[in-house]
Length: 255
Length: 333
Image (cartoon, rainbow over all chains, first blue to last red; front, side, top):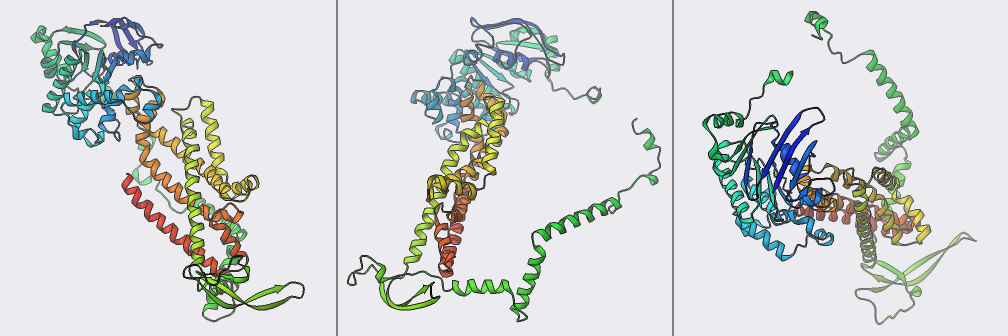
């Protein structure tokens, strides 16, 4: 499904964000990327989405290889849930979800927000799936609570029938109960639509609970890759330590 | 480490802040001299003298040109002219038995000036008086003025929307187009309506269209620049989210930028509309339609009572518009 073939990314200032990573992610897998800040999780994700280009190596989705020419073609096959959600605050919930379909809608129709009833019904179905109701449809996205906004973002990511959904810290700003229910939504939606999920998380607990596969990164390299049950105590402790938010080291910052 | 030498200084010897220094005094003096020259150029000194004379003249000391002017206007302006008086012999179809509603016929004198002999001849004629005829005429012309402001705003929007997008740094197709549209917009802004209207009256002839276009040209420069700046300041997050689905730049504009720009833009359009109506009232002075034409005509023949009616109608209309647009703004946001 998704293949990384010895992918590296070196930024202009010389930092090796991702170093020689090779991965094969199967269709329908719920993969969780773990690791401290700066481990290369976001870079890895952004490379899948075409926002960041790999310095070397190849990424393939299905049999389509990433390149500048087919960037928009690839982006259509990928759904994205951003860390700050990036919903359009003044747009209604319905249109926020439908905005995931924009590449397939004609210019004139999109100008007048005239989406077909089929598309709208699909949006309703997805919103219902993540637990929103009809009364939310015409509300502005900014009027919803954080958890509800997160669900709208999930619905938006799934509406274009993506093969891969990338979720960047989807529960970073939610309380534990809400986080669990949002992740559950994400997982059922993925199973229902047969989509591969790549999700970055900070909390190991959630990863153990929901993931089919945990990929742990440290300094741009993979140091654990496997099913949660394969985790031994030592690695688990190490992961716990890594996943904790790191206190900012003032001396290091100054240096 | 950098401030090694300064730290060795005892705190009593640190340099303190002084509000009054010779340099400050010199700058103040120079500014005063320049402003004085400028004030003399604009006759502020003369105005001050004339105003004091007027004040003195109010309490009965001396005479004042300013006060005379005011008295001449106010004396003739009140009572304001609301009725329309037309000499009967000038009406082509006059039917004494079938007068318009509420109107009546009145005896009166018509003065006529003979320039050759420099004398006034007085003739007794009948007048047809329509009690609110003139007010009606002024209100109809005021409505035309409002329509001018409206269409000026509509054309302004049609010009400024595409130009605004081309003049925003993140959605312009090319840097050259960006600079060109920015210069174009500031050119539009720099053209005063009255002067554009003068030229357009030459091109399109007398009438409201010249005024409409003049309003649109000036305000599109203002609205277009505002629109471009708002697009540039829109939050990047939603734009990134929508563009990362593979949508084109136009769709990103439509779904991630316009909803953000919309409320401020509406407020600005309302301001432009109000301003256009206010400006449209004076555009008639150069023959570009609206109530200004009537105002200028009456002013030139010293019919200050008619002028007073016109001014009152303009004043009330502007207040009414402001109240309405305040209410609309609260509902739109």
